[in-house]
Length: 276
Ligand code: PMP
Picture 1 (spheres, protein in one colour):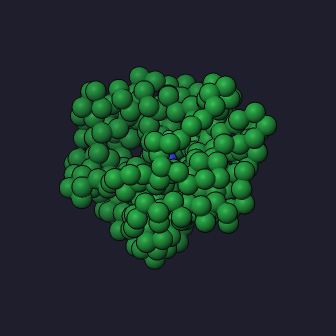
Picture 2 (cartoon, rainbow, N blue to C red; picture 1 turned 90 degrees about the vertical axis):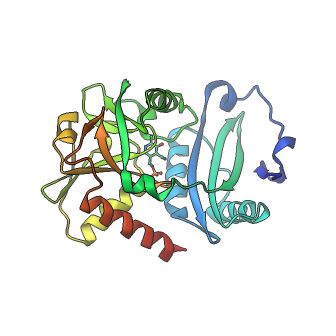
């Protein structure tokens, strides 16, 4: 099907897009992006995504090009023009001389089959290490090569995901999600200082845990902690909550999605619908 995108103020067919190449965005990867889900005309956690990219823009000296309301309107229109009810939406902003280039793309959301959620993800340990002191570690920049390489490495080795450790050997996240461990009915997740993204879904889980009186600890955790956990799961805005059942073919507990993972999965899906 013909795809319409929003590029710098205009809705155009994707194949008609033209861009200058002598920009900092193209030459140096000086840009930011957000991936969101739009369900039944509602952009899920829109405000949170927009706040995150807006804050990152300030850190990266990128001028925010539109008001939140205008961007909401643009995203909704992009989804509508392409006649999608459940959409993957990507907003990209990048530096172009003194201006900011803006791209909005909406595609049909392609969920993992439910069997995948029932079985859970199998992850490897990436050979790439995150520099926890790097500014880039906590931003969703258009320099995603590090994560792309980690993901490609995992796929080549036959795994679903790659667990990334930082330079000090502590857990950070995976190539496209945050990671949670459960031990003795308590939830653990790497602190932001470990070099992980301040994930929107991570925050939702932390809020849900608080609401349901589940104790939570953020801090430094090792791969041993992950092996010794009772269960583990991964989070991101597109796949939601995905149980993690093994690392390098070593099973976590009995290698099955755990109770707390399923609880959060159900709760999150309810929230998505309530939001919608
Ligand atoms: N870490 C990385 C490296 C990611 O790419 C993502 C996906 N944006 C996440 C974590 C999860 O973030 P969110 O919940 O905001 O989608």
